[in-house]
Image 1 (tube, rainbow, N blue to C red):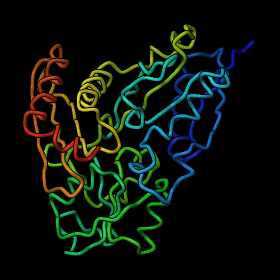
Image 2: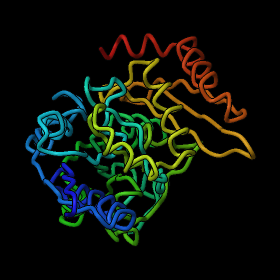
Image 3: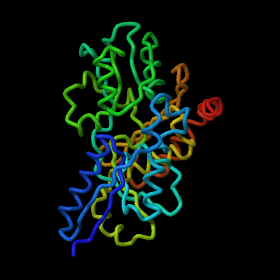
Image 4: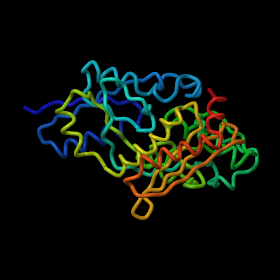
Length: 306
């Protein structure tokens, strides 16, 4: 008898790609496993006329999937790690991540311009406060407008002329075979991505030892180290969708480089911190970066936004 494993996933094309990718990895590893997808519509997918920061943040993409796990309707949920709050949901664990894909942001423009080449007054779409902050700091002459919807919806709005450019994650575009649409890649340290951007994570019930044993071989150790380090900074700063926060950990020689910033949405005030060191000191580096940001005034920025 083949054993069944149900994967809860959002219904968007990108979420389904991610879930199908995980299902493929599991099928390759376990011939006795029958993997089934359980697509679900989340509250974050339903409310498309308001910025995420005003309706409760990215956690709105998880609640229905987590309920399916806790009720036993699903055994596993596949998420973009950047959508997962740093405070764990009781009864569930997220301790397996796949190898990180391209972590950076991409500019898609109607005429192929880079961010520097966009004309003054150009309309740029993004609902991410982190992206808005960095965009306004670099190009205060642009019009920054809200943009919601799945990847294809956002691209359609660009093509129909609602915007001259939009900003999306490179990883999602590349996973959907849309990397050719990228006009410009925004790279660190000048532009920092979201915490854990490009990382797929797996969530399951903490008392489900059988699922745990099947999933742990899929974990990518260095990507997990980077995720844990970035989320540690976010946790120390009470990071959420409501805070323009960017944290990026990456390979540096034989060790780790860590960059972070906190700013206000209009980009007029941004504080930054950076550390390098051995991977074994990732936790202390995260604590130092968070403390440095607070010493520079991140606490006041956070308090004002709250």
